[in-house]
Length: 618
Image 1 (cartoon, rainbow, N blue to C red):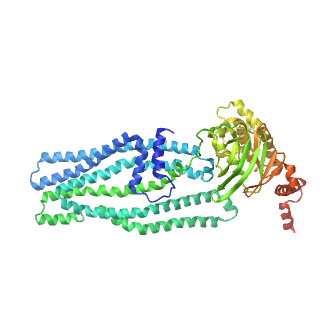
Image 2: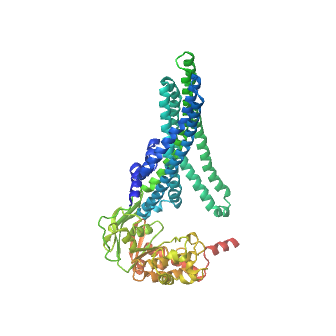
Image 3: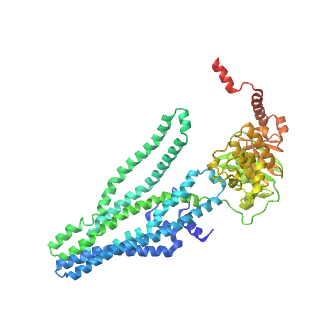
């Protein structure tokens, strides 16, 4: 981890360790968190604060110039030269404020952009160190939101925090100091409505912390509903359920409407009153000042100067409300970022060991998803170069057991060993090099065919890529593409059949040349022609490798060295095909049912659809 990443990690995980929806966070805590993320660039941050402070001071010069001019005019001491100088002072204040604030904003944006880059790199690095099972519970939309949208939205807090917060604090403090020097009694009266407004706006903001969380939750539900409706539109239309889909959307939209109405009733009136008070600095001071002047308790020119400077407080304090609202929006954003930054990483052994061979052993392995026990004390072993098939009903734990080998998750009890070494004691890069996966659902990037194959081994030569494709029975269809191996593939291999995508996945595994191969329902969606080609490709891939196959079609694994039958997370049966048939247990029952279906299919007998048609004609 780089120093930059360490800084951001410290600012992230230390201050927000735990879950995203934590206790209410104050504005000071949010500002401190954002400053902590930028502290690696302390010099630029300090310069930005100094420039914004200078801008705040300059913003008061016009009011001070007006106050001095009024005092001189009312006191009869004004000269044309003095008025010109005061006019130039006011102009210098306006120009200086714009220039200094612009420089402060430029510097803060440079800090924000650099910190965003580091934050994205740190998030990517964190994702690389998380267990692969983490991604089973997180959608790609959620990850995209964090890596792109949320990191982009953090810029608003970081880039505008230093200049605007400095201006919102320094200018009013200086103004109050000047007012106190003019007349401390009127100063207290001027601050009274401002104090009441800040108290009221603070109460509104405290209510808004929980409301902000609810708002983002409803907004996420709306986005999910809209996306689901759009993706499922063909299915909805096919079943003539447009009204049902629209009704689900209306429920979520109604929730947002009800939330907005309730929030408006709770916050609009107090917020409006607070806004009025924040800008009503003359509410008590002006009448009291006039009465004091009439009673001779304050000079007219002093009162005029006071009123002129007080008028400048309105714009300064009103900016606090907008700034606080924008900071509160950062809470949910930072929480979602922390959901990744604070996710527990895959533990890495201090002294990694190297497997001695490609054997795989499950030693009383147990695992649960939450409170649901998925695997319970599995004892299995497969020797190097042998084939172990995992079969059983859906939900029996087959895929979970296979994924434990690659540490998608770590076992809760027992161990998973490769070459006599617990996988938790193997360095991640070494473990990854030991295992090749061919998943049921193939993921292809929007690059060329060659790019997708070289994902397994980027340094592979053209000849090696072609050899892997030939072994996977993929070379012929690749050469039929418009540009052969240089043909760009759409996202997820758009335009290729399921069988073609699967053969590319097998070619990728061949190119990786890992000693252990896991096939997770590799032929599940293949038609008969593609299934034959895929089986031939798998035969080439499995040569001299330890093979673990997850299958529903038992005839595809009948020649496996060992077949493990899982049922409800336990090892129900174990043995070769003929021995399991002789036991006449669960495996034999599944085999007979599947063979009956295959016999009907090959004999051309009446399948379920034909039977339905005959009943219909009758």
